[in-house]
Length: 303
View 1: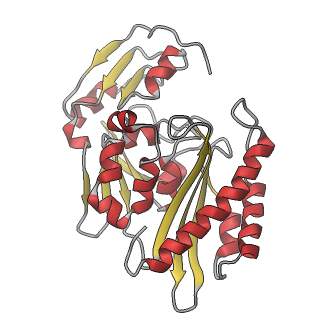
View 2 (view 1 turned 120 degrees about the vertical axis):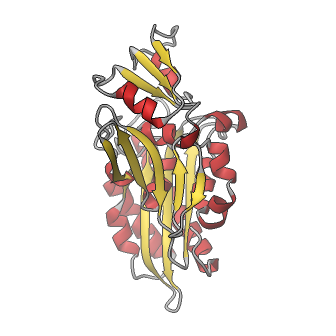
View 3 (view 1 turned 180 degrees about the vertical axis):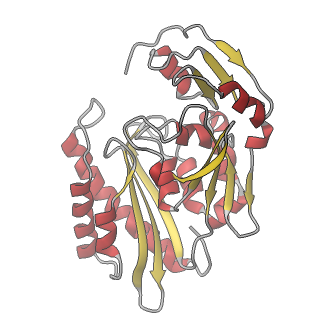
């Protein structure tokens, strides 16, 4: 946590279209141009001199990036400039992708959710960010756009290292897409933080579970952990413990221990490594149980 200073000098641009944004970013060296969405994290990073861009491109006026809609194939499409408030309250999200609304609704206070965006939360590459765990658990994909064209990338592959993304200079996140969940599928997101809603997440956990209803077993599961390693990651070993099994205390305890072995939490002023490991144990058990309970009531697709 660095000392907050005045913002460094920069040139500000406010384009109205994605094409204008791509043109402004074309040819820029890494770190030279910064995209500004909600700015809730980026402004603090600039005041701490963690980022010192020469040019800042504000995206607030790019209306084509602000949308939440259900596509013809049943998938969910979200524009990068969609506010967390709109994301948490959109009827289609609450109805069929509840875990996204659940995660978005736990970020900050009402004022912050009205400003912060899904694109900023995802592209910021913070290991404590709250939306990536649930989006990764849902198998979300990102649309990356540049003057050279568009490409799609699984969000799970977007974070190669601490505070880094797979985007190359000149690319921006324009859309997040999530496939329609299978029947008897549901998800949950839980986190621990120091002060209710207003502090960074110490540990976060999201689980999306698909049940084999006739057998009463877990057909598929994705467990994703935040702030438990340099990047948000799927606990694949823990997932393997659950597949094909019935939920029970013994299974949950075993899964939680495997998740701890897969994690590599650090010690910081917020929490020690050992404390974070205990949080992983607790949250893993609770989030899987919560997702299974929701999935057992989900006669249709409802994540």
